[in-house]
Image (cartoon, rainbow over all chains, first blue to last red; front, side):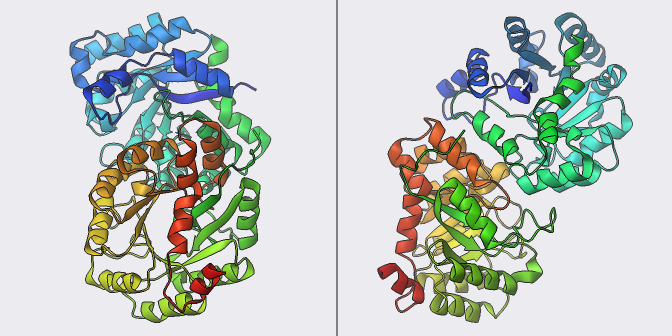
Length: 265
Length: 268
């Protein structure tokens, strides 16, 4: 069985305590992640950066920092699938050109929106160009979900209903406070999925799987850095779910393979 | 991955029977003490803090369910009595469960029981906790009633009470838990709903004596933390021992009023 991590980051600065620590968080390459994956038996990672969430990085790099993920895709073509993070505040024509280049020339297979870190609502009009592009090409689009006011499941549900071509993945499944919203909204949009990292509530996950099917849940780690690895804990969380072996295989890899069309490449 | 033999005692600071605040709306399953003990045995957990959880209208029943479990497994559970400070019955409930049934602490759940944690009525409960040397565990991590800073303010008002911040702010407010604990020394962090890497930063900031492992079972599996702590070099051996059991053991040993059943047990 192929295990696919649907949510990991390179170079996401997270609560550093000094400028040195911030710099060290931004300088983590893919090598330690690949080593961790090898150690814990993860075959493929769907990877995103951290820098492009911040508007100022788009003023210094043509792809805002997505370049770092592209380098990892090129170093590990069989192990790394790229999520492209668009410029939330870019000119629509420019954003569309950047997205086309990312998908057609560079081979990115999904889009990530972290509206909390980019500081706008998840369904902001700013992103219409992104949503239209993802809808046309039926791409998976993952949001950070679970944080008020910019990352609530209801905003993502709005996107899923307006753009039924998009496979909308609610990263963290609404976390601890908004997981019930995911459970409710998934009844009304077949193109809503959840991803398991940052969702410690075993009973919620089991209920979501019972109500909506395991095919709508993706395994993810939210891996950020080699320090304090999250990977084994995330795998154990899935192992401990009271579900069938077939459902577990869907979550651990088959669903991501289908959404990202990994067997078409 | 199998569980290695314990090099340290594991005590779980946060468990429930029946259901938990974070599970009852997702499942009707009635989680029993037998199931909980099975999980503890599987994961090498010697004993656990057990307290009421679930639907708020079942508050009196929750404490009774815990009493039954403590009575059936007296060496496996430390009962914490859940009270609602707005209901005058809290005083009699507290006395019954502590003096007659040997409960070792108090649980406050301002979110699930819907009250303001800095209300004057909570102060009355805290004053009794100080007099009876009872640790008070307070749910944290949800707005507007259970934010880390509010719990730190409560602890600062009552410096003689050991206050345990359950979930250490949880995923959304965890970053506020550490500075809250840094400014109030009688505040202890319990990490259920987070993963072990979250405790690393807390230990760096406030030391390894004010941190507790907890699972919030049935909301999470105990195995996630226990196996991860054992298999990764995140903590030193001393930190592991403190985090996973020794700190709670010390806290429980020091708890309870003189003359209570719990004190007599502790002396045996």
